[in-house]
Image (cartoon, rainbow, N blue to C red):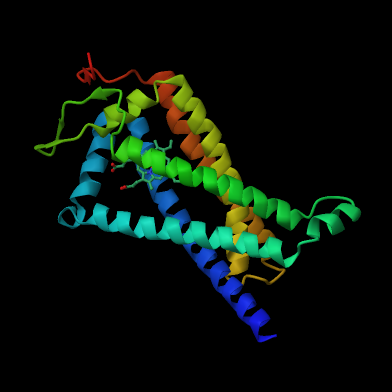
Length: 242
Ligand code: HEM
C-alpha cells in the first residue's frame, strides 16, 4: 500500500514538474517567436535585436538564460517520458481493454504521440542550436555588421542563407507542425497536471491551448516560408571553400 502511495506521489511530482517546465518553455517560445519575427523586417532590425540581447546584463543574460533553458528542456523531457511510461505500466492490459471497448485508449495514444513529437522536438532543438547559435555547417562565412558602432555577427545573413534552401524550409515546416501538435495537447495537459480540474474552466483551457498552438505554429512557419519566397541571400559573405 505504502509502495503504491510512493509511486503515485512520485508520479504526481513528475507531472507537476512536467507541467511547470512545459509552461515556462511556452514562455520561452513566445519570446523567441517575438524576437524572430524581426527577421521579417530585415537585417538592421534583426541584428540590432540579437546584438541587444547579447549585450544585456553586460553579456551575462544569454549565458544565464542558456543554463536555464538546458535545465528546463532536460527536466521537461525526463519528467514527460517517465510520466508516460508510468501511465503505460499502470495499465498493462489497457490496449486489450480499450480495443474491446471499440477503439484505442485516447489517453495512451495521446501520451504516445507526446513522446514521439517531444523526442523529435528535442533532437530538433539540439541541431537547431548547433545550426544558428553555434553556426555549425554554415553555408558561408560572414563579414561582421556594425550595430551601434560595434562590429557584430551577421546572424540575419546566416538565417537567410539557411532558409533559401528548400529542404531546410521543408524540414522546418514539418517540425513546426509537430511543435503545434505538441503544444496543443501539452498546454491543456500542463494545466491539468497543475490542478486545473474545475469542469467550468476546462473548455476555456482547451480553447486557449488550441489558439496558442495555432498562433505559435503559424508564427514560426511564416519565417522560413517568407524568407524562402521573398528574401535573397545577403551579399557580402564569403562562400566557405569558395
Ligand atoms: C522558424 C523558426 C525559428 C527560427 C528562425 C529560429 C531562430 C533562431 C536563432 C537565429 C537562434 C540563435 C540566437 C542567437 O544566437 O542569439 C536560435 C536559437 C535557439 N532557438 Fe530558435 N528559431 C526557430 C524556432 C525554434 C523553436 C521552435 C524552438 C524550440 C522549440 C527554438 C529553440 C531555440 C533555442 C533553445 C535556441 C538557443 C538559444 C540560445 O542559446 O541563446 N527555436 N533560434
